[in-house]
Length: 536
Image 1: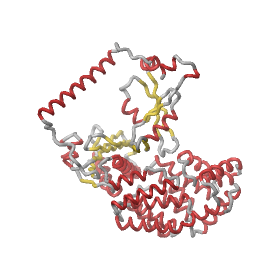
Image 2: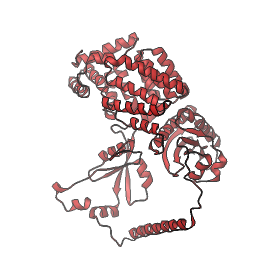
Image 3: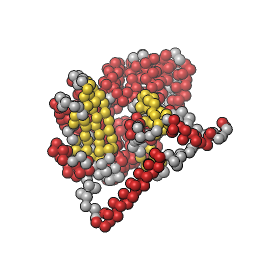
Image 4: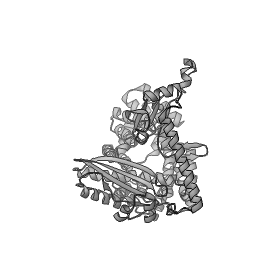
């Protein structure tokens, strides 16, 4: 395209923006979706016309292998992505730039000829191996044996230091991680490996066969004085391919931070395992339906109903499948949030029933108690809701604080809700955007209009499909005296939820807390009235 543009007039030029990312995708017919695709799309938007932006993962994989430079653009927060993205812009070197602009690669370039020769040589080698195997049979060990899809081993972490002085530290961290992970990642069966089996081979595929597992989680710690970097990876033992990796830094001398880091990496490992299972074609039919439902856009009633259909279909195949039961319960919560309507009490009763059903299947799963807490919260049974939330935290101290913050607001304690969001961010800094809506609500209840507006605007930049940020934003702008922005926020509200009324807002949340009723009336409902939102 650069070569074409060089000979074209300004009006005839076409400049592409390109974003490149490594990540999971989901294939639906001729379409692809998923977080990996969304990040690539955001990278494209950040690129200059005719330029290329890549994610940190891409830069790490290809750096030093191409005749280009990468300019670090820092971490960027982009729409609909919960975590910051590390962005690198591609800066072509002199040779690469001239080639890209001229569109010509010289056939005399010895490097290009060398690359072609190696490729041809590899092709010949592969062909020779194929002929030999055909004649003599494949004598390699069977490393493509069928392993249980939902099985994994956690290897003891290793030191990347030089003097081995951190052996005790690593052993403690490794033991805590391995012992706590199964309580959080309940979709797979864990086995206990031995150091001897790891030492026997460096081939993940052979190791997977020895341990009879499909996945292996391994980690290492690199220490430099009081700072250490913990890195964890998930490997598929069938292909030997690394599916996921993450890392984080911490201060060794800070015991509280060390505990926090283990909890954080457990939560991230759960996400990595869940993504691996989602992409596995050998997954059970019921789980495939759950993954399909999870991938739907449920910001509309049509999306919610389609997800419900898929969850119900999965439960017909496997009635005790916890992800299907729990997510089916959350599906009804989403329907409530979209529009409580006359079915509110019936839907709340169904959420309570689904949480009880999940409890009967696995009372040791923190996700079950999280749903239970939400169900009781919708019932305005806050005593039982807080008890269920406490049980969630006993099972998984690193569980997100969203539900706890919500319950505190409903209990008339927005100050404590803000403290809960701070704890959630400290636990997982990447999740900061997930708490902005709760911060907006809490600040608005307290009359902190500027802070409420800032938090609501951050949430809207992160996730604008859900309309329930707009009643809060409308009220906050109206209370702050900015009539123009209040009118704009109200217009967005009616675009997402036509015929929205104050009565609809009141019907959504129920609480027996007198302070909640007072703050709700004087701050939010009064703000909606100022903005001209109709009563009914």
